Image 1 (tube, helix red, strand yellow):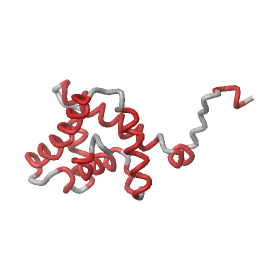
Image 2 (tube, helix red, strand yellow):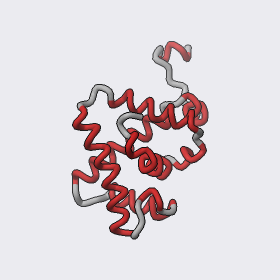
Image 3 (spheres, one colour):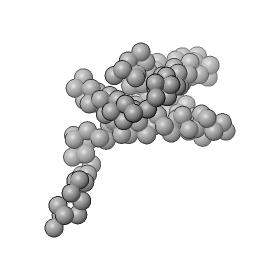
Image 4 (spheres, one colour):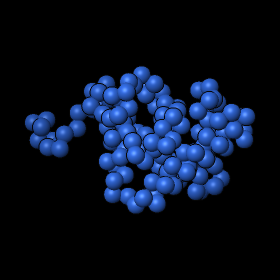
Length: 132
């Protein structure tokens, strides 16, 4: 994943905290997640991808300030509590950053065929025509 290659471990820790089922992904599954996110970001400017990397690094570093450990080294309960604090931050910029990152994680994880089958998602580009 080009966008998050330099912060892959931190990104995956965030992703697993947001979607705990992602813990079961193998290398192929993670590749699918990352490819979907890359595809979603390909039309975005490099400056936005740089901001995402910076935000992921900031999450790791800010967690150290609160817990004395970087985010990717925290246990799941502390990771969850920390991300909830970001989600509900008084600072709009932090909330927006978190919600954007969370959206990317959801898109990457649930955009995979395996995840769609697991949750019973049956949408099709043909829409309701398929159901008739």
